[in-house]
Amino acid sequence: MLWTILAILLIVFIGGPLYLILWLRNLAKKPQHSIIRSYPYFGWIRYALENLGPKLRQYWFDDDNGSRPFSRSDYLGIVFSAKYRSDLISFGSKRDFEGPGYYIANDLFPRLKEELQVGHQEEVQGMKYKIDHEGLFFRREHLVKDKTSRWLYSEDDAIIVGPERQKPWKLYGPFGVSATSYGSVGENYILSTGYGCQMAGGSWINTGEGGIAPEHLAGGADVIAQIGPGLFGFRDQKGNFSINEFKKAAEHPLIKAFELKFGQGAKIRGGHLEGEKVTAKVAKIRKVKEGETIISPNRFSFFRNSNEALKFIKQLQEVGGKPVGIKIVVGHSLNLDVLFETMKQLKIYPDFITVDGSEGGSGATYKAMADTMGLPLYSALVAVVDKVHQYDVRDRIKIFASGKLISADKIAIALAIGADAVNSARGFMIANGCIMAMQCHTGKCPAGVTTTDPKQQEALVPDEKKWRVMNYIVTVRQGLFALAAACGLDSPRKFTRDHIVYKGNDGQVKRLSEIFPLPFSKENIQED
Image (cartoon, rainbow, N blue to C red):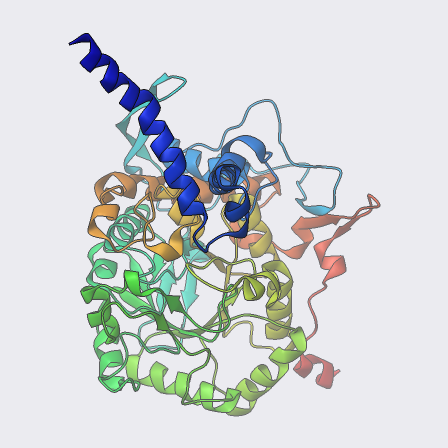
């Protein structure tokens, strides 16, 4: 009996490891990675460390303000806003005040809370987390019911998109969800985000170019239906644009506006969806084959210049009776002149322009395009706002801005430059539980956000996460009103370039209105 036990122990503790070493040695001789061929054991250790590196850097080694695309400080700001409806910090800011950057110019005599023009001030049902115990390995917390103000615009400050349309769109808030296509994100994300936007009021969700899923309408929020060059959701069986599909969408009361996607900051080339994410439901909505990777064109095939594009916009405005806008990426301000000159010649104007900065996100794109194509948001926004003033069409066109606008201060700068409202995609993804795992294109998102896999989506529970979305919107809007009050304004709608200063490397400070003064319109110049 004793010899049997010893033999078993020898096999387990000596024979087993010896066999494993020899097996790995033999495996290393097969054609594969060159380092593993020469140094198999150290090579595998190197490979393991290489895979662990991004995860270790995210939590241990990156400083709070240094990581990309969002710093740890930015990420936690969204999480605390969404979970606890709070953006309080202790001890001081972690911003590098020595470097150049934008600052908001406060007034010597700020507004009191009761002096603010806040609309619809009744409190509504809310829920936020309360921490019961903060331990080393876990946090125990639970949702508690409470009441909250929604911090909406007053009637005088409401944003009217497409006032000339049969059914204009009235907005009581400046902050909504940027285009995120079904397929790129899953049903649970769309549901929780839609529910949260509806509860917060004054917000919206953009369908992205993947078409209108039932979940976009189930939440009850205002919806912008995006039409991309692939025409998904707006095409016939042959892939051509279907005016009948458009009419059907325009008849739905929750669809408030349509957006033609001319470009997206992270991928001017057109949308990209890996085949693993193209489920039967995604394929049915898009009228494509299940399981096949989708790469949409980088331009609408049936118009190739501003003249043809604007005539198509007019057709949609007349047929649908609702606002129709365009989403663009700015390469250079001079590139906009042809578009605006054609608007004036034809007397056709999009109801809104969404300006997408090159720093915008994507579920899948090429690195070279994401790193260098198009202007960053603030520069692009200055160019577009200046053009609408230069061509004297500011009163006809509302401007939406998108590109890493995740917090009240960044949004306030965009509003001051001249945007009417802003969109965020990744901000709402983080509010829904995204941990920035950078696995969006794989369909294996650990948080259940960017996946259509039913099992993976179980991580995201819409009935819970909808409160986080609502809290995030409300906290951002409250922050905007607080910043406006500090500037002596009664509403964020009153921000101008006079309220933003830029501090350079040399310490000199200039108002944005000095660096980028609004141009006179061409009509006024000619009259003078």
